[in-house]
Image (cartoon, rainbow, N blue to C red; front, top):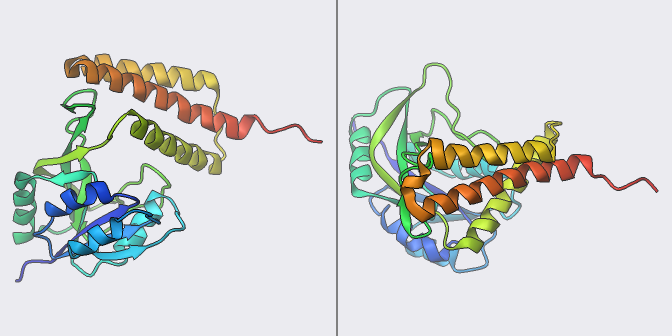
Length: 258
């Protein structure tokens, strides 16, 4: 039996700065599919220079639907999901190739993600190994349609196996990048909860924010990550508060009727 083919799949927007280094760690796959959501920089040129098949869906539907659309463009047997700010290490590549050499039935694969944040790799704060499910047979499954925090659908009979090696994640360029990215996630989270008829309060936001800091910095030993661990725990607490505040504003602060 011949080895199944593998596609690396990415959803991107304005990632020209990151994309070349990411795709350089994927030059061994059979196919690269890039689904763009309306870049205005050189993302397309960078992707095509690396041999990627490039598609555009500028009407942003949310993370889950965009990933589902990207997967529909894949011709290969297996799918490997990577973000533009991630890098596949040689050890992780070797682990993936071992899987493809003898693929198991009804099995999906997770990988440890090691994030570089504000000058160091974060190994605590609950951020490592940060296993993400990113490798699976295309015909077996795919992402759900969640607007944010989307997940690969797994059901009865599907088992998840961890791979060796790290997926390096260069997550934030600077503080402004963190704040912009965090605000986007908070907005999508609040919109998704609002659609489900959920409500919130500022007290909920405060309690969840404090709980987030205690969990990351103390319970998950974020203090062992030095100043970066402290900063990340504080920022994460702030981001947690903001998403609940966003939902409260959307559902509880309608203007008075004229």
